[in-house]
Length: 541
Image (cartoon, rainbow, N blue to C red; front, side, top):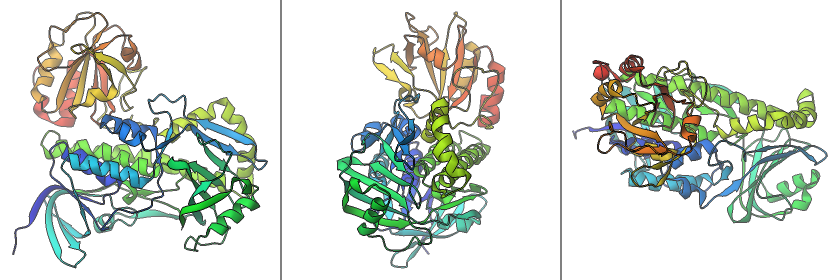
């Protein structure tokens, strides 16, 4: 009998979530196998929107331009009432991000970008290989894989991550229940050429007799139409271009003249999630653990957020840099985010599809009023996923922080320059080494000896960096190889809520503020780091 192959992590499913997770693990030196039961990539996909928070993650990986170049950008969404007049508009323009827009790109192209990124990290998709079954052992997971020709292979993985969609074989094998149900609705979509007066810089939504009709501008002058079919029609009913044209005419939108379809499809939508995202050494990401209405374009982005959260934690545990318990923070952090998104998309779906009753009154009369009172801006923050945070996480050191980016929130867009090269730099430049960043802001001349004594024990985990004020030279305590940034206008300190005292910011590899405080709070930070990453931080301080 041949020897069973071993691997650190088996990732099942090579959609955007699985590709991102496998890449994050591989670039941190973790052994990964990425399997996909399909023999070739899908030709069509429903997911379109890449949201601002996802773009910030991609920017951190050096992929922002790869996404922007082939895409179409939309400033926000306009929604029109029954009289076809604009009811309200939610703009992304004022978002606190370098990517204040909906980036519209077919999922197939998103996957190709991530496939190339994965290859650069040393990961190749193993197509035509399915996950069949597994047994968890004391030290890992013994998984059985099956090829198209029926031959089987066993693999001994330290961890298995299911990124294999709503019908996840990994979820079923782990015995994790998928609770919820479907909406009693049938939708259809059409990618068409549209002779239209609609502004291609915006998404557009119209109410109709049977439900909402949405228009999404795509690259190459293509528009995607998504609409609710007549009540009683099932999702599997064949879609025709005549049906699309007739629905538009019936709802006084025939002048938009849809033609030359490149894709027609019908679909239903589900509202389901697991109660847990982990079972022993098995984790779930993306649609394997949550599916919901496509309202707001949240789904793919939510799954990629799962992967970005889990990847660095799993890598640190595998390398022995962190305690196994840090993996508990994955579900602890992501489940509240998932629940929030599912509530939002459910409420949006019920509101926009209501044929009568109080929801129609709210949609047609109340929303236009409250949109002008700040609601539209708050909605844009939620839709962009920029407002998502982990304030109650066990691996975030909350405390007396009152202003600026708080522990658990994302690191905001920052501008500074490299003291050595004078090169203009931005937030992603902080994370070049993929480590936890210990950013020291040494004002008033108070030294950092106590913190240095704690942090130098774990240089495998910590990247010590400096952020000095304009006119300051290289700190005398700075060591060879440590980056020194200059906060020329004081904006970095303002965004991080730092006043004129020696301070630090501990920043996670996924772009989340882990802790903030003053350099004199050595014991507090040491105790926190010992709890999260182990006794390697013990010592004087």
